[in-house]
Image (cartoon, rainbow, N blue to C red; front, side):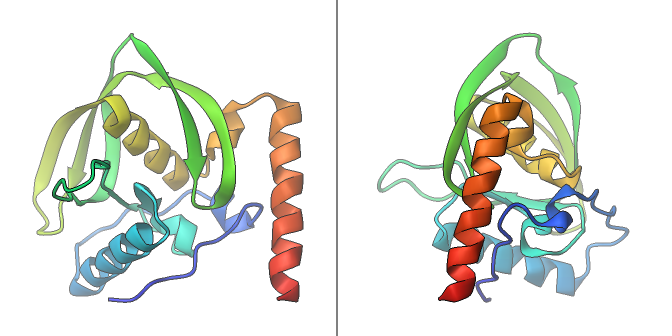
Length: 173
């Protein structure tokens, strides 16, 4: 396993639609393990393959944040929201591709998601609370959507300028 570099917005790869995965191969399972290691190292609670420059429909997440609690890593190939609640929740979201920037995003409070697991089996589950927000946020990445796309234009532009400045500073290091 290895830690992969995470793309920082604005990067054109973050705005592209990821390709469906035909078969779960050993190479894709290894990629998913690298993504989990990268996510935990960042630290974050979710990561999509496009965030490490790979335009495949693969996400990983683990929303267990309590000290001493066992991690619950999830690997999802081709995840798709198949049901949304009418009830909405607002969470202050952040993103590993938009470090240290946050914004309130309103999303369905519960979602049903179907996906293929690391063993190639079809799965379906209902998610709520932080898990629902996280899985929707990561699936958005597969469709070229960032959490800042839900914010007002002025706020989105301000965050984008901050990220451009951060990228320039990192390039000088």
